[in-house]
Image (cartoon, rainbow, N blue to C red; front, side, top):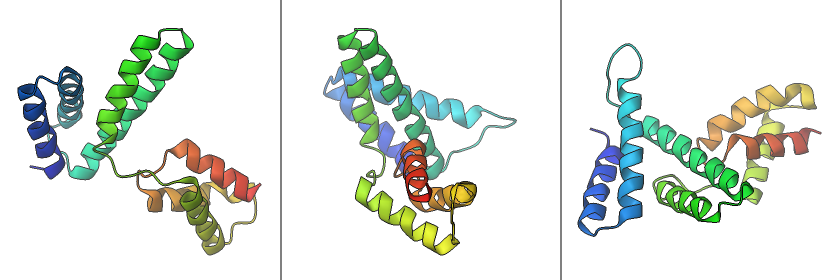
Length: 150
């Protein structure tokens, strides 16, 4: 069984014992998403740590988007709850690249691929996404690639 999934289960048990309602609800939601992913498709399978991280990234993104939607609708309490859940999920993800590191990585890929304009954006994006491996959102990466190629 993958280590990350074991860690999520152990942390859920700890949160339940300490009566941490937010953490308990969030970890249950994440484990339910992982289980749903495991049985999706033609046959049930065990997810690798990388696949579990992909599920975690998806769940974190859902929380961010929900928080923005609630905040935009003037529902601050629900927005704060979504942000708190997002923070719990983010604790299980690798640290995000800061803007300077992302810019340096994109510049390196642009140099290596010999990209000269926006027509090369797809090639650069593919190479950068492979190196970023979940440490930066696609939107941030695309914006930086556009900035450097434009």
